[in-house]
Image (cartoon, rainbow, N blue to C red; front, side, top):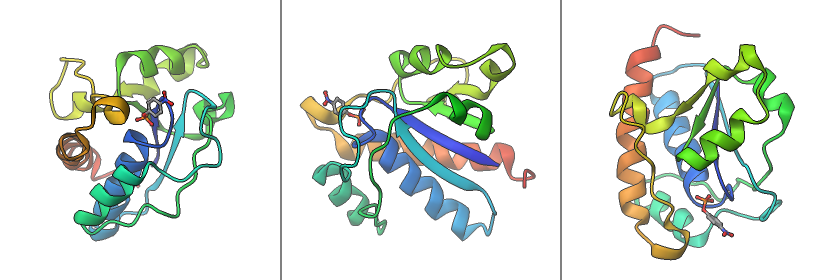
Length: 151
Ligand code: 4NP
């Protein structure tokens, strides 16, 4: 399984999602590959937001090796699952997808709250990084539970 986490800037939510899922996958000894990207190119090359780094650190996860990159069309080919944090990310990702690739794109919180299309709130201006962490933690647990037979 190759999973790509996607948000707007790739500095707040999707780096946390990448770090959380990588830690869980390692614990379960799964061979999945996890990456993240942003739909915008606003923060290319930057470290995750310092608030994401410290929230992850409080939970024993180091995400300071990550650097922001922009989502590209070839990601839709390369990854098995492309997970959006909110509806606007979801629609932006679909713009790069062909017909066959559309089904790979999902709202990440639908793993925890099926069919509800809930958003991971953007914490960039409003804060709430711990809440973002908790939502992503639940979603990643469910994602693993529902795909644990996948290589
Ligand atoms: P993210 O958060 O999409 O979770 O990385 C944001 C980061 C930067 C901006 C907005 C959201 N920004 O406007 O620069």
